[in-house]
Amino acid sequence: KGLGAPTNLAADLLGRRPDIVAARLRAEAASARVTAAKAEYYPNIDLAASGMLLALTPGDLSLSALRELLRLDRDGSRQLSPAARDIALAWWQEHGEYAAERGWLWQQYAKATSRPQWAEITLALADGDLTTAGDLLDRSGERLPRYDRINAATRLDDVRLAQSDAFATSQEQPADDPLYQQLGEALLAHADELGGGSSVRHEAGSLRERQQAARWHLSISPRLTLDLAGGHITRRNDNPAVIGVTPDESYGSARLVWRHRDGETRLTAESRHSFDTYNPLQIEHEQQIDARLSFALAVAARQPATESTALRVAGMKDIERLGLRYRPTERDQIYLEHRWQQYATQTGTEVGNGQVWQFEAAHALRREPRSLEASVFSSHQQFGRRQTGDIFDARLDPLRPAGLAAADLGNDFFLPQNFRYHGIRLSTDTRFARDYTRAWRPYATVARTWHSNLGAGYDLAAGIAGSVFGADHLSGTWKLAKGGANTVGLVREIGLTYRIHY
Image (cartoon, rainbow, N blue to C red; front, side, top):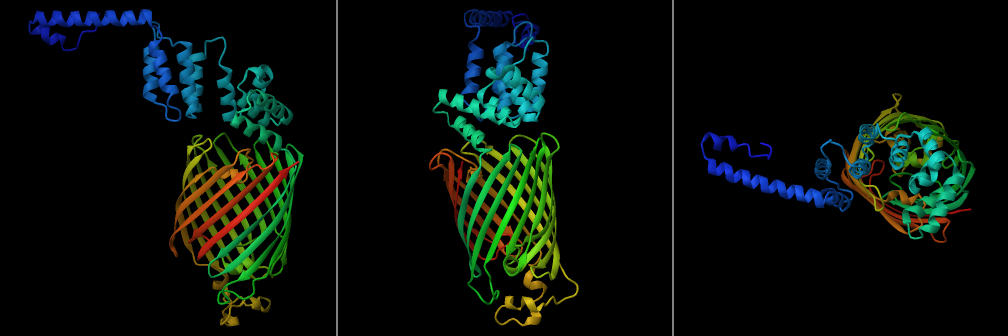
């Protein structure tokens, strides 16, 4: 029994086969001597082999291998070695299982005189525990991992410390691309910017639009920024049977953004002149409830409307929006939004109302560049027409398509039919279309869509972004879509944006 004999040994004893019993006992004794010799001369061979297995399979670590490591590492007192504890801790951290990592820390290090600070700072940043992160930064700043040290300083709004640490470390690691990404973000996050862009959009059988815009970003403080923008949209009508005049549009806007510890508040005021002059106004607020849950609220008046060609040229809408975002893990997120909308022409004539339900679920297959994210999305848009019937206004007569009587310029001319729109999407590195990157990085997205009225469609986009001189950002994007939520025909678009930080 002490040698670990097979469970069917009792059967051999009952069967009175002493020769078989003796042979098995000799084999078990020999196996036990070999195991003991291996443990005496190679005490860490199983630990090293299991650790190498984990290290050589990044991104797809095996839980069974981890369990085998912990099983082999236990001694008679059933205690794990420090190396085994750290490998297990790193496994939880790699998979973003911070709740399990916290439980592991409590279990394995509760009676220890110290806990690994690299694990504590990661947990504090993941949970948004800025008090703990600040305390660790003050007590052990130089001993913390460089990436976490810079992230902690950035989250605590200690911009100078984040910039100094990133710059000092980059001198020691000149080939560290992630570090240079951090340095660029730390230096440029609170820098002033000046830039602009140009794009061309063509919807088959409808409008051609060319847009030029300029933007000035002012960093008033680490928590307060101001954006001033202006632009002009030139329109050309390809099909007079769809709409009459398509006037050009010009606009100017100012946006004030206040970043606070648990969210962000934005106030935007604009002046637009298209079919008529109107002044959009919007206030938005995003609030982080905990590490996984956040919500967004928005109230807007006289916003540009794009639900149809007529609304795009001569319409506007009031919006009330409520959104909820939940992140069950570091790689997954679920977003649900509901919007209430009131439509009118730019001359003030009421058109109708609408409600939009929108759902999206995304999973990050890979988070580092090149990132890869898969998502599914669905929306249901419902419109209500005015009960008074004809909304004819003499000021709207120039919009009347060729061959359409003035009396027919009513609700259906402005508002589309109710529809459902859903699809699946795969995207990579799309954040670099707007975020700074020192290296040139391509990005792309492909989606298969279904529209309840128009049938199957698709949405493709590709581009490249990078730095030309160092403190700047240039991106070019090409798009092709068919059967979109607010379009009927094939839509082509190409755009170029540039900004310089100073």
